[in-house]
Image (cartoon, rainbow, N blue to C red; front, side, top):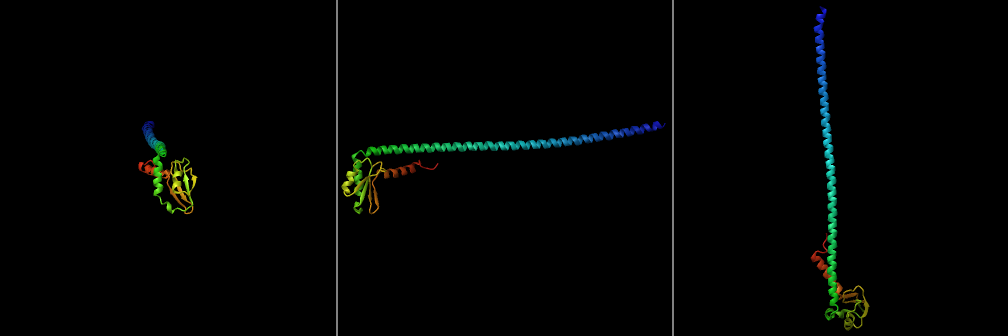
Length: 200
């Protein structure tokens, strides 16, 4: 009889223990699932941040490479343009020098030099006058001797194109009748107008 009374109590106790164990298992399982979910969320967040950081770093590297390439291309283009400008300038200068050379072989050259010397006020010069001539004397000496018979004459290798310079050694006056001076002035003006000498 006592056994009959104990059986329901044992069954009830067993059921309570099993129910509590199941609840605890469920609770542990829920906590574990929550921890896993939280760990997965953090892992995804960390992975996303790492991916963003990598993409940002790679983008910056690509941009830097592109910028370096653009700078190099611009520099090369500027060098090419500058080289071409210098070639054009040199070609034009050579062509003008060739035409001047041809002109200095004509009688008109000495006539033009004569007009320049005649228009100058040679009376202001003292007796101590030196006339500087180009190596290729096209008649400059014969012409200036007519107007400055007391002058001394020297070769000036800086006078390349033609003409002459008259220097008063006493008064420190220099009269420049060279084609070189006119050529330099004209070339400077041409380069300015044509923009061939403009900054890149």
